[in-house]
Image 1 (tube, one colour):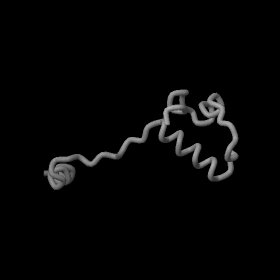
Image 2 (cartoon, helix red, strand yellow):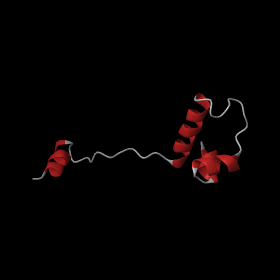
Image 3 (cartoon, one colour):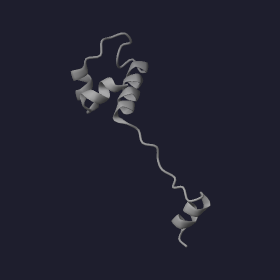
Image 4 (cartoon, one colour):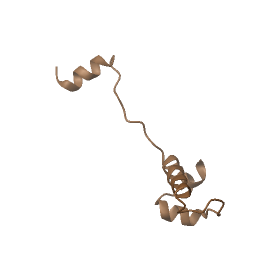
Length: 65
């Protein structure tokens, strides 16, 4: 039995998976980081076109969260 099979068996047959982070969550985290670091001024309007371009994501993740 190889190491991966041993780990799989020791976990009761459940694979350990890295949690997935959605584009909406990534966008939210980045916008929050920019506000907290004063890159984006708190209270300033967030323009979807600018966010979409800056974050490299589409409109849906920008407005989803």
